[in-house]
Image 1 (tube, rainbow, N blue to C red):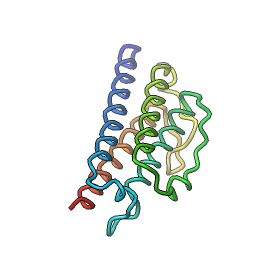
Image 2 (tube, rainbow, N blue to C red):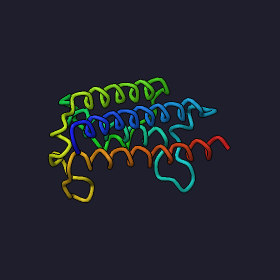
Image 3 (tube, rainbow, N blue to C red):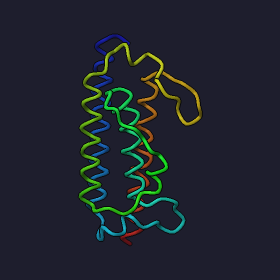
Length: 156
């Protein structure tokens, strides 16, 4: 890719991450009873609250810390054992994550996109930063879909 195409790619990433994190907030606000955000639906392993903590931790670690240099230290186990907290706290965490991601992407250079990302994906394989961003957008979209179905099940 040339520098113009890379700049467009980065803009598209900002758009996708912003859009989907906004949708996560919309889903959370749409629950009829916010206490069920922390309940596990039948046949599902994680509550919506846990999924949100996981999404934010993933993005804060892989984009905030690795690209933006925020110093964020991820505790993945804590994401999956998170205790219930108020809806406003979750929304604030998502909003902070969105700001962190957008800012990190503003400072991303074309050269960084083609470098090997500093951490492997879940399989242990290393890929380019460009690939990692595609992985992170699909990961976000996957869990956003889970959140949507969790809300629908719990509100039924």
